[in-house]
Image 1 (spheres, rainbow, N blue to C red):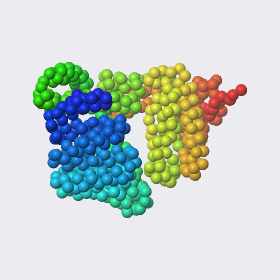
Image 2 (tube, rainbow, N blue to C red):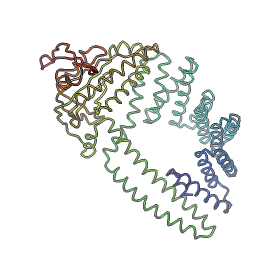
Image 3 (cartoon, rainbow, N blue to C red):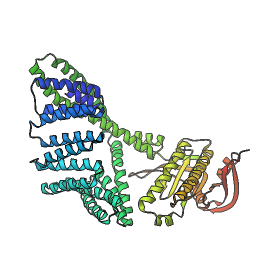
Image 4 (cartoon, rainbow, N blue to C red):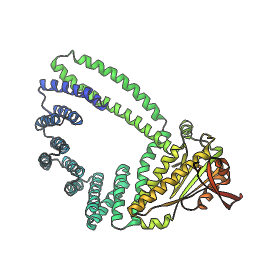
Length: 527
């Protein structure tokens, strides 16, 4: 059985099934008809279910139920019945779904243990929620909440409140009933307050997003925006925490490789144990199976720990590369810090939306953030295509630079090409929104070329940024532009004038730099 579990953890369902069937054969010959055999048979059913062999899965689950009913474990019986209901749901057999769901519900109702019953109601509610039957899900979530209060389970009560609030929020969207939105706010506020004290970030991330939507539905737009910001903080904090732990605790790497070494040794020992097991008598085999099961649990736990460490390491690396250039990220990982660098030839791009403040008053917080995200995701794709480094967004402004961290001879040409694509995207976006009868953003773009200093600032939530007169002039180019145009400085003009059409448009004062000439830029006309 432990080898079956190992192969299951590794995703090798064929081998896992082979060893589960061997384990079942031994257990049946030993006439073991308890929980251990039930769990093996249920695991066989899980594999068949993953392979879409639904009838075999149902047969396995029903066989598991026979063993489970020899025990007092009503929770295991209820969840196994729900597994069968889930398969029938995949097959759109609503009658069978209802039959097995009601059976699971009845078993749970008769469970004498309150904790098991509370968990049963939780799973029954989640089953209905996933099926889109929100009113029915509410009934079970409320029963779960009631038992949580009786048992004095603070965190579980907060989760039950959150589930109720989340369900009411969806019902409010479907029915437009203000009382549903009000109930959503009540339960979600209560849940979030408790979860904040418990620092349960994953649940805070989930429920704060729904609370923001509930506030919006009750017309509390300021609260909606405030809670949406909290949601973003919780979402980012989950990844920030992982990132900090990976960089501040160098022992993580050591533990990872140490565990890999232990894992390999464990694998060798377990293979030897398996060979030894085959030489024992039937009774001896049964005993060894139970012992190996315990060892297998430890092995699977080690394997799971290793995968978690590897997964978290990759996640932290990916997150770091999402906020820092590759060279800077590598330097930070190696030295724990990254030195500021002078880059003498780069081009900086600024974009800003025209009339953003007025438009924000007409859109809901969710709509506003959605529109910004839609545009900025497109910008990200475009700048990446042209080998440009996104620096940051500041409200509705977007900033990127070409020519760092590695020098690029055609940095100015790359950034102008990217600017033209961004401008063209915004024109298509405007047409689409007009056709839909919706509000839309319009944009200005400014570009300047010159020298900047780039590096990381701060020690907490550090950010990669650039500084220098060239940055300030790029910002002036943007603010001096007109909607739908790309305004470049003289320094950029000198670098791209042979490859693009330009139009001189006058001069502006730049602090400490005197006057700066400006040009509109467009793709070169085709001959």
